[in-house]
Image 1 (cartoon, rainbow, N blue to C red):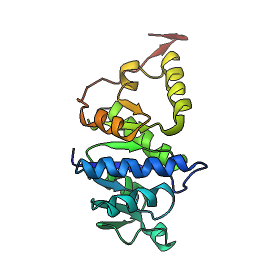
Image 2 (cartoon, one colour; image 1 turned 180 degrees about the vertical axis):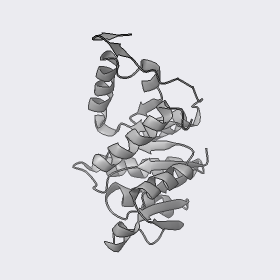
Image 3 (cartoon, rainbow, N blue to C red; image 1 turned 120 degrees about the horizontal axis):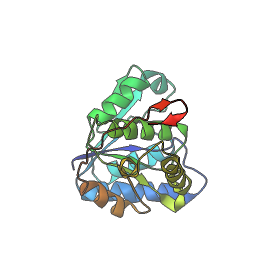
Image 4 (cartoon, helix red, strand yellow; image 1 turned 45 degrees about the vertical axis):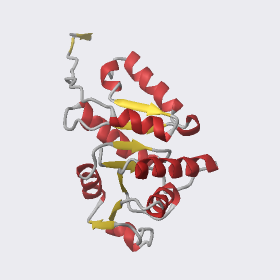
Length: 197
């Protein structure tokens, strides 16, 4: 694995454990010669992981929409920085440049990016690994919710397994490196006269 796209918050969060996890993930990536691809910001966890990758001598590529760059939240010290038109172009380029995806703790933007690549995987549009860095149990509620979605028959267990998770960066990166693509066809229930067929 040569590159990982890391989705994470533009805030550092309520606990210092999140920033520390970002630094540990940066070290694991640099030690494994895995380049960072991320949203190009210099704030929050985004800035923490980029700064640490660079401090350790690693490669960091940022992709940021012009509107955010104009607000001076873009990181100007990266290995390379792509300034793009909008969020759609940003996410497409992040996915194109990456061999896998990690969602660290973050807000709505992080969740939106995570679920987009998860959806693409479920539909067979890519076969790249996707992982949750479940620092401090941050994603426990989401993992339980996905179990609920499975129970309610809106997601199959094998499709949910496309998303791996671990509480520590080294364990998560190992899961992603050892991931083997599995193809699951998206199934559609048809409802006739109130009955699922």
